[in-house]
Length: 88
Image (tube, rainbow, N blue to C red; front, top):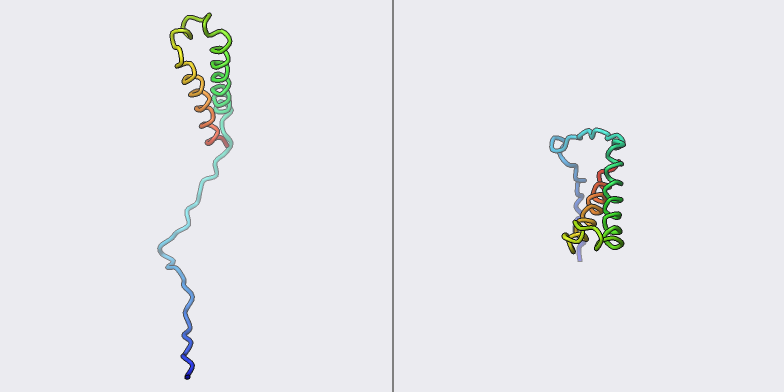
Protein backbone atom coordinates (compact mmCIF):
# COMPACT_ATOMS: atom_id res chain seq x y z
CA UNK A 1 0.00 0.00 0.00
CA UNK A 2 1.37 3.46 -0.87
CA UNK A 3 2.34 5.79 1.96
CA UNK A 4 0.39 9.08 2.22
CA UNK A 5 2.06 12.46 2.13
CA UNK A 6 2.82 14.16 5.41
CA UNK A 7 1.67 17.76 5.41
CA UNK A 8 3.62 20.38 7.30
CA UNK A 9 1.57 22.66 9.53
CA UNK A 10 2.71 26.19 10.19
CA UNK A 11 3.01 27.25 13.79
CA UNK A 12 0.19 29.48 15.00
CA UNK A 13 1.18 33.07 15.66
CA UNK A 14 -1.47 35.32 17.19
CA UNK A 15 -2.06 38.66 15.49
CA UNK A 16 -0.03 41.45 17.06
CA UNK A 17 -2.73 44.12 16.86
CA UNK A 18 -5.24 42.33 19.09
CA UNK A 19 -3.43 42.48 22.36
CA UNK A 20 -1.50 45.44 23.65
CA UNK A 21 0.33 45.19 26.96
CA UNK A 22 -1.19 47.19 29.79
CA UNK A 23 1.04 48.66 32.44
CA UNK A 24 -0.27 48.00 35.92
CA UNK A 25 0.40 50.65 38.50
CA UNK A 26 2.18 49.15 41.49
CA UNK A 27 0.15 49.65 44.63
CA UNK A 28 1.97 50.69 47.75
CA UNK A 29 1.38 49.46 51.27
CA UNK A 30 -1.93 50.08 53.02
CA UNK A 31 -2.44 53.17 55.11
CA UNK A 32 -1.86 52.56 58.84
CA UNK A 33 -5.40 53.75 59.56
CA UNK A 34 -6.70 50.90 57.37
CA UNK A 35 -4.92 48.38 59.60
CA UNK A 36 -6.29 50.01 62.74
CA UNK A 37 -9.85 49.85 61.42
CA UNK A 38 -9.42 46.29 60.15
CA UNK A 39 -8.07 44.88 63.40
CA UNK A 40 -10.38 47.14 65.40
CA UNK A 41 -13.48 45.65 63.76
CA UNK A 42 -12.31 42.14 64.51
CA UNK A 43 -11.48 42.94 68.14
CA UNK A 44 -14.73 44.89 68.71
CA UNK A 45 -16.73 41.98 67.29
CA UNK A 46 -14.94 39.55 69.57
CA UNK A 47 -15.44 41.82 72.60
CA UNK A 48 -19.14 42.19 71.69
CA UNK A 49 -19.62 38.41 71.70
CA UNK A 50 -17.66 37.86 74.91
CA UNK A 51 -19.50 40.71 76.62
CA UNK A 52 -22.80 39.19 75.51
CA UNK A 53 -21.89 35.84 77.06
CA UNK A 54 -20.46 37.19 80.30
CA UNK A 55 -22.64 40.20 81.14
CA UNK A 56 -25.51 40.01 78.63
CA UNK A 57 -28.37 39.78 81.14
CA UNK A 58 -26.99 42.62 83.27
CA UNK A 59 -26.73 45.20 80.44
CA UNK A 60 -30.15 46.50 79.38
CA UNK A 61 -29.51 47.21 75.68
CA UNK A 62 -27.86 43.80 75.19
CA UNK A 63 -30.91 42.14 76.74
CA UNK A 64 -33.22 44.03 74.35
CA UNK A 65 -31.25 42.87 71.31
CA UNK A 66 -31.52 39.21 72.28
CA UNK A 67 -30.07 36.89 69.63
CA UNK A 68 -29.21 39.83 67.37
CA UNK A 69 -26.08 40.20 69.50
CA UNK A 70 -24.61 37.19 67.68
CA UNK A 71 -25.38 38.73 64.29
CA UNK A 72 -23.80 42.04 65.30
CA UNK A 73 -20.66 40.42 66.73
CA UNK A 74 -20.12 38.09 63.80
CA UNK A 75 -20.88 40.86 61.29
CA UNK A 76 -18.14 43.02 62.82
CA UNK A 77 -15.67 40.14 62.73
CA UNK A 78 -16.55 39.24 59.13
CA UNK A 79 -16.26 42.89 58.04
CA UNK A 80 -12.74 42.94 59.48
CA UNK A 81 -11.90 39.67 57.73
CA UNK A 82 -13.19 41.01 54.40
CA UNK A 83 -10.92 44.00 54.83
CA UNK A 84 -7.91 41.66 54.96
CA UNK A 85 -8.45 40.92 51.27
CA UNK A 86 -7.54 44.50 50.31
CA UNK A 87 -4.66 44.76 52.78
CA UNK A 88 -1.27 45.25 51.12
